[in-house]
Amino acid sequence: MMKHWKILAAASLIAFAMNTSFADGIKSGAPGGWQVWGPLGDKYEMGIDTAESTPEHLALLIASKDIATNETVTLMQQIDAKEYEGSIIELSMMVKAAGADKNRVWLRHMKATNFNGIQASSIPNGKDWERIVVSSYFPKDLPAMYKHFDTGISLASKGKIWVRDIKLERKPYVAMTNPVELPSFRAGLPTYPARNLNFTE
Image (tube, rainbow, N blue to C red; front, side):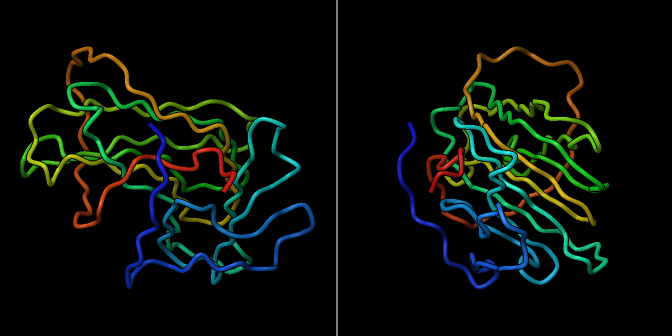
């Protein structure tokens, strides 16, 4: 399922630059296979936190700098959805946050032609590691241009968030009653299989 894919080069894509302001124990820089949007390096920094990693799973830290900001930094992938048609996409990961009032883990895709939706969950502040799950039904028979979905992790405030042990799974569809739809969509990027969910690249 997991195949290597090229990182999109786009004018609005923030370069995966290394920055050196993190303390010892942080391998600074964005993980391979992911796209970064927002002021990384200016108001936020990102890297592997060895102190929060386990032998099996590296922990990614996204943290604000001392500059007060309401701008958003996002780490995301756009993934080919062909094998998920007619099923539930389930995105889960171990997470924790410290002083990060505005954050979310999200999953976004077209629900039907001309209608899109986003499912999201916030990382609880000030708690120990816990697993959160975001899931969404991906419909059958969408036009080819809509057969993809985005997954992302966003921070839009001061503070820190950590994520590790990301899982992306296909689950059988079970009809939902009154699902919540929060429209938001960004189109036009190529799609690829999911990659580097454990931040080892």
